[in-house]
Length: 336
Ligand code: EPU
Image (tube, rainbow, N blue to C red):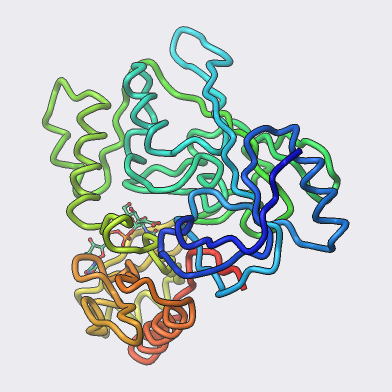
């Protein structure tokens, strides 16, 4: 019998520390518990919502659903050849612990993705990315329970429809419960150092994956607040993608604009836009504001409600729209 509880606080389970109550809540520790959880929810006409590390979520005061906290554990080596390994990792594992462990095994590929909060199962949902690497670059497949068809589905990398901070699992929200993912890693090391702050490592001729990992950890610790001390959900907005014409208009008006080439268009640094709009280090109702060292990170130091979080987010979006005629898209998922 699985232990489904009622009226459970989700405050400890979301990194923005928003006070929120789930009408129904269960921790999934074994895949075989799923049919019972599904039957329970169907009998009560409850939606199922899957919670990972809660580090990319804005929660309503009350979540009328059966919230399933995915705590499936396990890491297995499934294939190996001369150059590569393929590992299968359960969704409830902590992402950063996986990264540290893989490097300790002598496998490279995840070092640029060190210190990203959250679970392994959440990684493909928003296609986590940092310092020039996305999880999509390493992912072979996802094993997920399709809640609509009520069967296990194996989705290849292509079937996951990965894009910048997006995937099938984000666009078709609440359809899949991710059980595990397969990643392909390398035994030899070819560093990815094109992202600005990592370029200094290029002169190191004995560079190891561990060195890149250490540098990424140091950069993140200097710029991004630790959610255990200052509640936050990482970058709160996506970097907007614009066409050449829009880019030219912006650059003419703002010659110091920070941007990156992205395919045929341009990605504008949303942190720079918010900073330029004078909002870095500023806050509003409930103390919700933009972090002083990285304006793109919305912080909730007083553990205020989603109302205050959404009000500040709207204010930021409005100011950016007024000043740059650009619309910022919220990055975390919003559970209403
Ligand atoms: N900038 C400012 N002021 C600010 C913040 C940024 O001027 O307050 C400018 C700086 O010039 C900086 C540039 O914006 O060089 C870009 O900032 P940063 O290097 O911090 O990267 P980002 O584009 O803001 C993205 C990801 C991060 C990821 C970093 C590193 C998104 C939405 N965010 O941030 O991901 O760690 O690049 O690759 O794509 C996350 O998704 O939660 C996250 C933290």
